[in-house]
Image 1 (cartoon, rainbow, N blue to C red):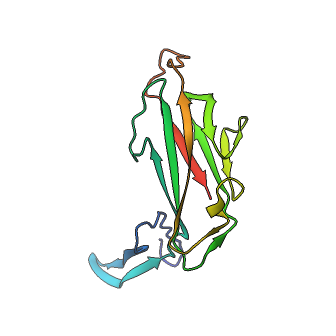
Image 2: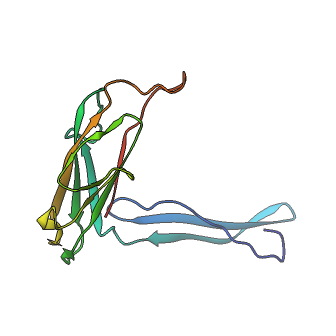
Length: 168
């Protein structure tokens, strides 16, 4: 910041973990006649509330599952209520992305949208989503097939990624 001007310093990041706190040391110095002087030296403490819902994603029973071509992959999304209050009428929408998915091979008790490649779970399919008690967990799951051959569209196609995300 130039003399006699104002400025803004932006710190961008993600707070994660159980403590949800980030300590940022702040040091402002000035130089007069070649000598440095400390104007301000403090630590800024940023904190945030923990997420009310925590989701664990498993494929084939693992967090780091490696799928084989042509396989039928079982998936599970574990939804945990981290609050001290019951959560009511939870709706979970799972979205799958990837060129290797066989969209005709989706097996689920949720509502499958073949256009969007999403599966919607509500209390109509999973009764525990009607009211999830504090610190309790509910699972939504199903199976999705993979194509029997790699969908090679260009000569550079390789390292196919399968992605499943959930919005609660």
